[in-house]
Image 1: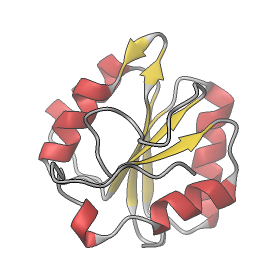
Image 2 (image 1 turned 30 degrees about the horizontal axis):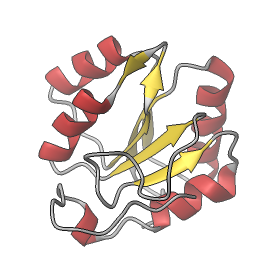
Image 3 (image 1 turned 45 degrees about the vertical axis):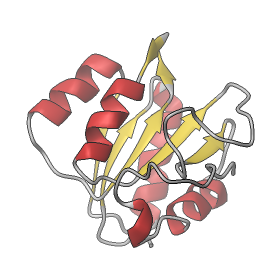
Image 4 (image 1 turned 90 degrees about the vertical axis):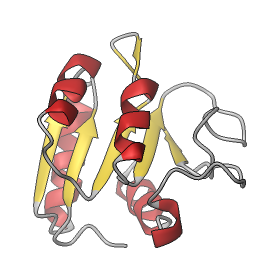
Amino acid sequence: MELKGMRLLVLEDEYLIGLELERIAEECQAQSVDLVSNVSELLAWIESEAECDIAIIEVEAHGVSSLQAATLLQSRGVPLVFTTAYDVEAGGIDGFVGVTVVGKPYGKSQIIKAVAALSPSKKRFNETGSSGELV
């Protein structure tokens, strides 16, 4: 799965990293990027019933967990990629089996690899099994 023509939703609380993700998406010919900087904005975006093809979600933005909002996105069938500055065990994020986690700092290649790892089988919440992939 490439970014070309995709609509991205990005939760990133660090302004410069958000701008970098927008730049990466633009370089990869994404159709659009909706950038939000905190969980309240993310929840408002979800409530608006806007659509996206992929969500790149920081696990904790401004000290607030984004996992509840991520669960709502998963229930809508939105493929997720998590980002975090914190150490994450090889099993990924509890409750998000199979969702790739990209550690900060990261660059274009890590984001592209994480998005490429998304497959149609990972587009819906998967309760069955395999652990998330760390990138």
